Image 1 (tube, rainbow over the protein chains, first blue to last red):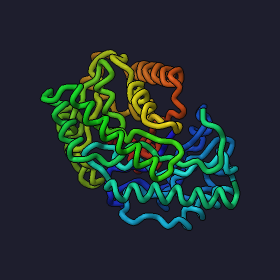
Image 2: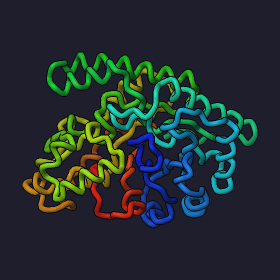
Image 3: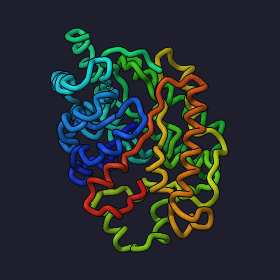
Image 4: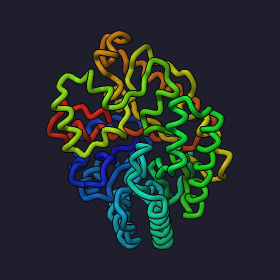
Length: 134
Length: 220
């Protein structure tokens, strides 16, 4: 199951802000294998909040922001995954975008060229992580 | 199911739409373009999106949701008892119009882009929601694939527009029972067809706990 804080605008300040703490009681009761969660934006709070409670499931860790034009540094993505590894085994940890690149047909939040580079950054980070911990 | 491997990579679902895709979608919605022609264009866009994911080296691939108006409003193509409505259409039915318009403005909400799958009758699957999307995607890659579906909470919250929905359902809960049934049927169909990964999207859950106004209804 995927949860985020809105993906309709490139203005980060109008999107919602706050960690997952208040959702945990609901998330814990859900019979799902994986939570696909935003973590590329600081608005999502700290990984500990989810890691402490939901580490019996897989985590789809959001590592790139679909709304920005700058491609995230591979080292930063690796760092985010390493923080999550305090709570998740490598085989529980998926790396993904924070959300889609165009949830609304007429409101693409990025262009294909940038979106593609962001996917490449995710894969490059996963390759480094596999070498280190795989 | 997908074999457990370290650090699998994927994306959450939708891909930027091309001008051609958008024009074709509008034409199809207006009835000016046939389903066959619409699908031919969408198939091409999906093919390119899959190739790009292969090229990037992702492990689990998606189709980019090119056929969809939005990640949840597309269900009006598939589910009986629903109607695709613009937020402008919705203005006639919201209780406090001024407040609603103010909310759209301050949140930079794309009033023209957001279309709502309003419930106007008894809900049932006219055709599967995403089974054909899965079957097509399956022909394009050897890799595991992911299908995205709107979650039951998101749909319940957006589809209920009292003035229109009350004719079919007494309350939210009665309507939600049918939404859950539709989603469950779809999930089973996808499983039986061999889909590796189904993701339910529930972005609205954060709105309930993070928005200062709990009763605020953004219809998304």
